[in-house]
Every structure is written in structure tokens, then in C-alpha cells.
Picture 1: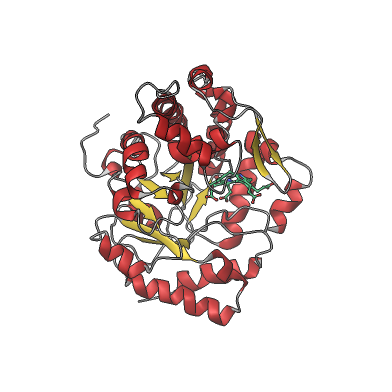
Picture 2 (picture 1 turned 120 degrees about the horizontal axis):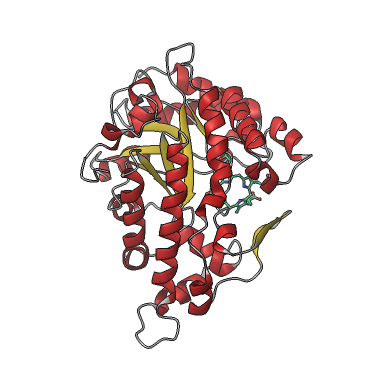
Length: 372
Ligand code: CP3
């Protein structure tokens, strides 16, 4: 594939939909759109009764691994909310299984990795040759793509988003064994790589390289199945200082972005608590950067020289406010973007359980009806 083209969509893969027809994909590429596209992080999740009805009979992993159910959950959320993009229902940690790392989701606790990675020997044992075992995600994407293939009433083609984790965020789950507050073990292994003679000095670079191999193969399956855009979740990158991010994470992440773009799709690169990291995250070359609610969108975008598209950035907890306040906050964000090509409306992070569904529907409506 031609990896030097400046515009990824100029080399669409055989089955990718015409990006002309999707305002979401056009916005990712900073092309003009008729109105700001909107979707929500974790739009299919526990706040939604339809999801909970499915969840009553299936575990999270069952849903992810059964293409018919994953597709149904994805489609239901996108249609209920009337958004411009559907993110495939899956989880960041699915690639751990074919890599040989067992994990489970424990109610109330989140993901738990039973034997966290702490040494070079453990990294060496991780496998990179079984990514095809993840093809159930591609099968689900095919079903979602087929469902949304006819243009909608307004002529727009709904965007299909595939996703993967970023090397740092995935490594942090592998090393900490679950969610973490201080990332002590992850940073310890990271710092060991800068210490010649440390017994585990090769562990961090090897882990980054192995993740890169698996993630590119997995993203490639998703694009082949019909994903129009790949979002890379680096949810916990905000835990890193600028020098640590630059030295230990930027190289592998940049390579990942480059190789996913070479598949012919734009890349959204997302993190939380990244206000000070944004200029460095931009160096990955991603087409779109996710902004959390702590940054002023207008100021952050200006700081990025408008050289990337931006996605965000309503506080997900604002969805618990009155619809009046919600309208104010939503319109403030739309005005901050000022109709400039390359804004995708979203939250700054995922919808949380307990969020009133009607408020999410209302925000989508406000964005759809807004005219600058
Ligand atoms: O519409 C969607 O966005 C849903 C698809 C989706 C899920 N996980 C399903 C899920 C996506 C995009 C993810 C990504 C994901 N998974 C991330 C990055 C997103 C972010 O929030 O920054 C992370 C960090 C994970 C790992 C993970 N999965 C955690 C930490 C948890 C527990 C969180 C919690 O609130 O308990 C999960 C579980 C999970 N993955 C749920 C869903 C809908 C909720 C649990 C359930 O249904 O039982």
C-alpha cells in the first residue's frame, strides 16, 4: 500500500464506503460537512435498557465474541440515539487472549489479569501469531456494515468505527493486572528500558513491538470487514509526563498510527487528561485527536494549529444536568468549534451507568439541529 499519500481516504480499501457520503468520515479528514457529526463514547453500554436486556442473558465477553449479538447491540445504540457513527461493540482487552494472557471482567471491579506481566521472560512468552482468533470482531463489523449500507433518509452514510487500544494503555492493563491509580509497575518496567544492564531492560520495547504486531493485524481485519475509521484508545496516556510519553510511548504509537492509516482509513487518537500532552500526541500523525472536557476546545484546537481534526468534548457527567444546562453546554462546544471543518461532537470520555438515556438522545438532537 502507498504509505506516503497525505490523505488516507484517497486510497480507500476495496470495500470501504465512499467517504463523500459520510459526514462523519469527511469531518475526520477536515473536509466541509453540512452539519457537525455526532456520536458518543460508550454509546452502547449499561446506561441503556436495551443493552442491559441483552446483558441479562450474556456475559460481556459472550456479547463481544458472538457477532450477531455484538452487531445487534452496536446497531440498536446507533439507531436509538440517531447518531452519525456506530462504534463496534467490543473491548480493548480482547487481544490479550490470543496473546496468551488470561483475563476476566469481575463485576464492580473491571478487568482482572490473573498473571500480570512483570518481567522480560513473561513478555517473551506472549504470542503474536494468533490475531486471526479475533476475527469474530470483523464478522460483527461485516453485519453492521451491511445493515447500514443503504444511505439514511438525509442521504448520509453512517460511519462505522473499529477500534484498538494503544500500546501504553494496553501494556498498563497487562502489567498492573487491572485498572490502576499510579501505574507504578508499568512505569517501573518502562524506566527499566532506559537502564542498560537491568535484567528486564528489553521487556518494555519488546512488549510495545509485540502489541504493535497484533494491533496492526487486528485493525487490518476490522478495516477489511468495513470499518471506515479506526479509533485508538490511549485512555490512560494522561498519566504520563511529556518526556516519558515522548521517550517511551510516542515511537510505537506513531508507528501504529502510520500502519493503520496505510490500511486506507483515518485514525482517531483518544486519551483522557491529556491537555498538556496534546501537542506531543499530535506528533503521532493521527487525523483526529480526542479532547476531554477539561480543555477549552477553541483554545486547544488553536494550539494544534487546526492541523488535525478534533473530537469532543462534553463532560459525560453533564448528561445528568437539566436539559436547559445541557443545551447550553452543548451549544458552547459547537460555538467554540465555530463550524470549522474537522469537528466531531462527542463526550470527553464514556457515558457512565445511570445516565438518563433521554438526555443522550437530546444532545444528539441539539447537535443535529444546530446551525452556526
Ligand atoms: O459503545 C461502546 O463504546 C461500547 C464498546 C466498548 C466497550 N469497551 C464495551 C464495554 C468500548 C469502546 C470499550 C473500550 C474500552 N475497554 C476501554 C477504552 C474506553 C475508555 O473508557 O477509555 C477500556 C479502558 C476498556 C477496558 C474495560 N472494559 C474496563 C476498564 C471495563 C470496566 C469499566 C466499568 O465501567 O466497569 C470494561 C467493561 C466494559 N466494556 C463495559 C462495556 C459496555 C461495561 C461492563 C459490562 O457491560 O459488564
